[in-house]
Picture 1 (cartoon, rainbow, N blue to C red):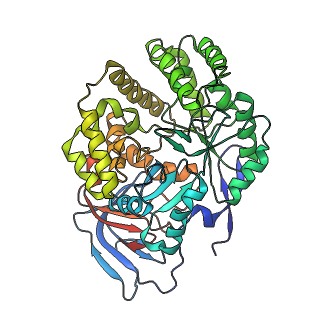
Picture 2: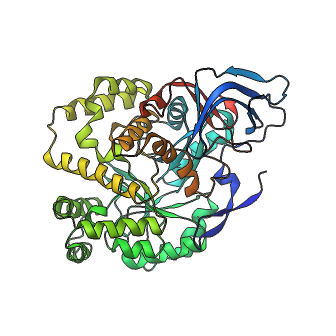
Picture 3: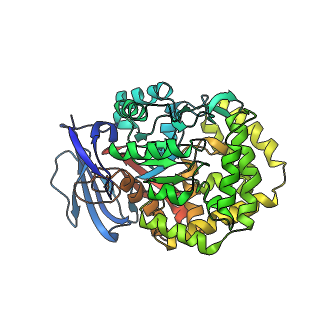
Length: 474
């Protein structure tokens, strides 16, 4: 047993978290043979670049770093000359159960193949996620670390309820009559280590959810509800945002009027489906808001996000789905061959169909706005986390993370800061930066050996030579 520990989330958020849940898949190896990587260049966002180093690993932990190896009998030796060692990568926005045809074994295999040693599932019904958890427990040495929120926490008119095409059941709905402490307590008992909020929550319910989550030491990330002013949500304890969703609305010159209009729409007097109502609101407000941005207001909000330590997972891969159209690239479609046959066929047919549709001006506009916003956030010190939304949008698990890193680089982050977004920062989200995210003695041995220097080009994160997860060579 790893026992119990404390995660410190900053501010007044301090909660007791079961490290068995946080480190799912971690195993103590009492008789494990060691690994020694000799004469390699180390790169991480805390310590920079260290050349000609030898790293010794045993029991799933980095034992020594220096010019000489730790004396460990029966160690496996890896020649690191001309190679580069980085911390294992994260994809901090995945949905393991979104497409049933893509099983968890395929997900896990593709993540590790692409150097993704930790994933954050941001929305799944726990009964459907349970097979993934069981598989990790049964195969701890050949699976990534999994952190999960459980179901999306949405309002009564929830979006993902499995009733409309394209909107599988991923959520639960709560309102002012719900026992929110009981809901959160139940999720914690199921092993969740953060909460994912969604857009149809009422203002009052959302504020109560933030309060209860804070009392339990849990960050709430997700889509900021359409019913609330973003600055109020930040001040109430918002822990993170996904897809920079609803920043467009918050930055508009007449943001207050847009909020009033949304609140009227959310009364949903016509009782239309939550998915349709959300789509209607965004289609009526998003591009108007982008065309009428108040730069001063937007900068104030960005600075407040930075001040309050609100993490951003922009998922530029999904924000640029209609503009970059990875699925239209025959080389990208080759990655579909690594999916189960049913998924491969469906993805190929869907991709070829969409590839014949011209890119719209709105798609180009949203692309440019998303990258520009991420650049401004980064400049103001907002913490950026790399995540993709795979497998939504024909984003192949594992491979899509490297597309996200390229887009973050295009948005203006240095290559070192892009690495930070996929290593240290997601660990910080969970208060685990002392265990993960850098190459240091005592840290968990989740590592990727590259043939090329990622600081020269972020696409070099794809030049994977070896992957080590939980101290095991894959």
